[in-house]
Image (spheres, rainbow, N blue to C red):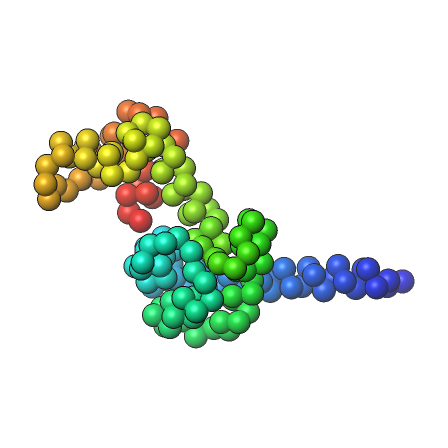
Length: 158
């Protein structure tokens, strides 16, 4: 026998599944176009780098990406995730790709602990030379020597 509570739970599960599906579709589109969600986030979605998007910024960002899916459904699904994370009116990288957000957060915390932050890490590894570049091998070796717990290549390439 179907009770109103069971019907509500089934409806909620369908909404969760469709919300997850539209986010995964959007994430796949970003990965296909930019190689990874972090690159798309930095280059197109959040070019002012304030780490979050309000609804008007979100709509502008979708226009820049060229994505032609259901913007209202995507916003609603991302905002639901944001509310689960304690946000109330903005979405961020964490809502689009929790895994990539986790990698970035781990790296930032690790660089603060070992160098004072990402910029200080770069300066130390390049000898504070102006216009220096850092090769992946040097970055990977520095991460390895200091016990970075994640994949250094994933951070370097994003």
